[in-house]
Length: 294
Image 1 (spheres, rainbow, N blue to C red):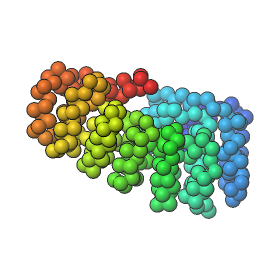
Image 2: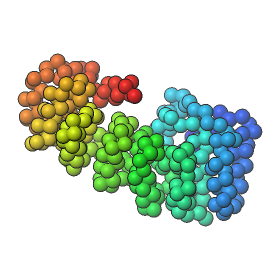
Image 3: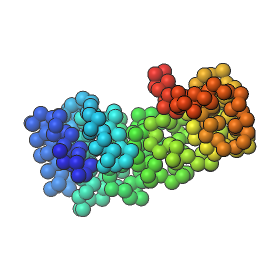
Image 4: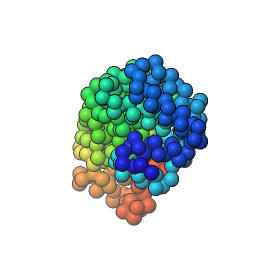
């Protein structure tokens, strides 16, 4: 298997899974696009891929997942399908053609894409050559209210953590809450947490409380390491919640908080604090409960 580049790796994944005639069709189309400068041919091929190759799950092995991680830190293939993989391979090949303005092509394709095409376009962003123009279009993609498209950028994608400014990162995390998306699949969530995001999320929590609406426990994950003053009071309020998950999230956040007041609050929850220390209560365990609830 050629795993020296992400493009070679994607090609090898498809070669292992596709019947010879389907794989040969894809190769012939990519060869055609290497020799043609026709935007129309690119759009036609992009649209034909699901019908010609199918939409089955890619179903990668543990070894293949490890290879993806070794090629691009944070790259996960969970949720990828055959047609998505082929579309992203096609885009990766086009992106490395010196005679094309890939960012302009990417923008034009996003403007005319249907739902499945949009998801494929944004899911592969970590594999494309980075540029300011490409980054602008990915930022535009965050404006969508279609959760599946938003999650193609935000979930299991190392691009945001690697390239987003703090302002755009914070906007993405807050937008995830607005579109009722989860936070735990966001790569770099802990590493990119920051005091301004913690403040924004506490303001958001107050809006939810004022409207008598629940607050996702994952919100406190980005607050705990930066909580001071009134933010610690917010964590205490969440810890007193009758909602078990919100209380668990608050306890985890308090354990990550360096403010002395947080440690005083934790003394009221000795069993849960011990569960955190023993690894029985963690953000992973909360994520599992959220996923189980759907």
